[in-house]
Length: 359
Image (cartoon, helix red, strand yellow):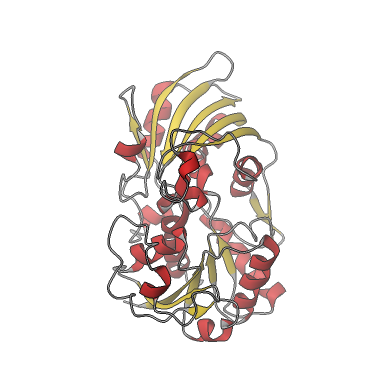
């Protein structure tokens, strides 16, 4: 079996640490490069992290003595040492786009956790169980960049993992029209812990910068079509959202309300969810959950502490499906924001890209 040398840029941040933790024992991927800002460059990974390791398991011994590279100053070295990289850098949006395109032009495929390139029509934004066909835009992107191997693929926003997967198998069958969603998002989504963000203890903050725009626009791109070398968003659906930061370590929850052209039957929806699977399950990719969508009949589920780790944090938990007086249906969704919503989702995307020959 092919083993891939993998770089992680932005390796010292919260998502970068999650990449390190999840890739340490990956059957296909071997960490070959860790890169971060100039502040960490030249130090071992253990020295660069110091007391900031935030994962629930200890730092893997295999990475402790890797010397951290300067992400922006050593692009050629990163590209030469990696079959592809995961990007979780923390810079201004325009700087991230320039950096990731520089890596791609160095013939290094980039699987990005960042939002900087998500709006580009030739950059696939992939939820592997939902829109794997969007990988077909990569040859057009390579033509624009002038590359033979290099490209950028992006993971979608962490919060939409809690509701887009549930709506997707209902969308075409029943004609999805309008969606109202309220998300209740964990502090790790801001790269924080309770120790570093005391303001969040016993508190709720009713605003997350830029999150509502992403929550409303990105699903329409996920549901879009590949046409003439571009991803064209599906603007036939209207989504409105409210995004709230809540005092939870990990796990984004969503309350979803949806209207359809044909009102779905509750029992049929549950059956559709329980039987839905995608290409990752068909290919038995290493990080793919065996059952993508889990529905709980208990009135008090899903719960963040009980269910965010379901199927190693890669499954979507659903519950409280019922009819609504204004919309057709309402229900609750939950996903692990730094696993399925960040590093794990990107790793599964990379597995799919490898399996289909793009990497």
